[in-house]
Picture 1: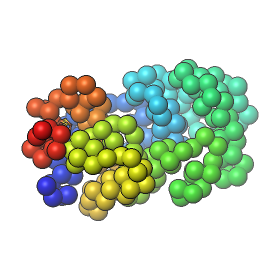
Picture 2: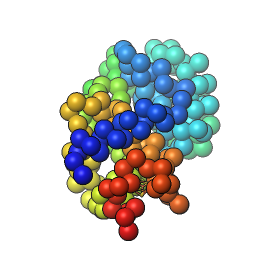
Picture 3: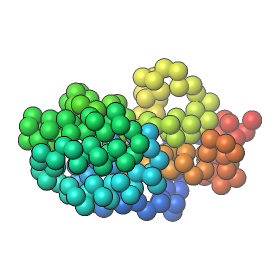
Picture 4: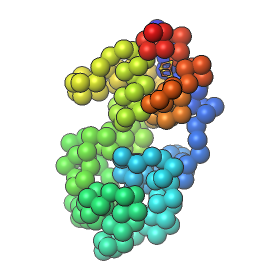
Length: 211
Ligand code: SF4
């Protein structure tokens, strides 16, 4: 399977099958890094449907980073609605850091993003990919499942896996469209139990599907 064929199939599939979500307008040009960051923070260890209602309430209350100014308890309370208290408690500090140390501008480098309170590799890569168009794939559980099944590779070495997935990117295709196609494929088709291989656009070349 050539890389171009693989990417083309998946991006074509996402073009026809993307689910609409409340954060979609953040991806319209010019992209809104703040809203993309909020969405990705909420999507960490939470499914998209559950995160959507909280995201809508959060953005209605705090449409910009500047509008958060001093609202620590409200920020934490909204994030608590996602069910993870520890993550929620980190959010006020994160937004304070962004306001005070970065003058309200979301940083554009992995090292700066991961130096922020509560931002790990997934969220940093998601912001770089979706907000800034960087050639990096944010690796979540759905991406891991699709790639390990499709290519028959293992995920034991996280760094090697990240390099492998980044290596699949096509320089002529928006990295965000490719990353989203993998995530949605994992959520809708390449499911944990009973993957819908008969509906999969890349089933002809899947190591798992051909077993
Ligand atoms: S063929 Fe099946 S196992 Fe392979 S990527 Fe598609 S849905 Fe997943």
